[in-house]
Length: 141
Length: 106
Image (cartoon, rainbow over all chains, first blue to last red):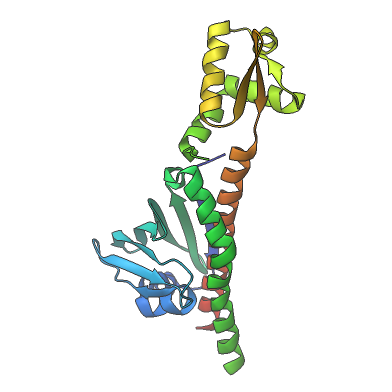
């Protein structure tokens, strides 16, 4: 068992486009969560779900140099600091994304359970709201 | 449950403790400490120390019955840690799927 979640993805898009999608507040608000965000070190950001019952995410931008983005990730309902790191790498025909979410063991067990239930009851549909949005946009096209 | 996930992860990070825990899980019943220490080539004190660590992490329970102390495994803390990590894994998978869809259409 590990105290780290890592993900790797390849996108068939230029690195600049992917970087903008993860650092620009308007873009983040479109595909992820409603964002008050600036890719500047020290910026106190907030991600808010459009649904009231979903806890906001808050944190501070630790690093934002192309193409590395690091911010603390604090779920307001369960205020424990974890860290999310995005690293982009230019590859032939696209971009490789490396995502790392660390510090999860900072959660106390009971907090973990709360988080878990908050995710199962709330987060699934906080995120599925985005799918609805994307579907609408796709149908509109 | 009041255990820090770190406590749980540390408790099972040690190979001997993992073996002790495993032995208790597969026995599916309470085992006396004397029987556990017979299975391992370490001192009774060493075993007791390991059991204490596992107990503190909520991974085992120790009951006294007469002069013997019995241990049994409790896998709930592990399930909770695992389930929680799994949920976050899925959260990031969904998020990156969204990002991919967004990039494709924009």
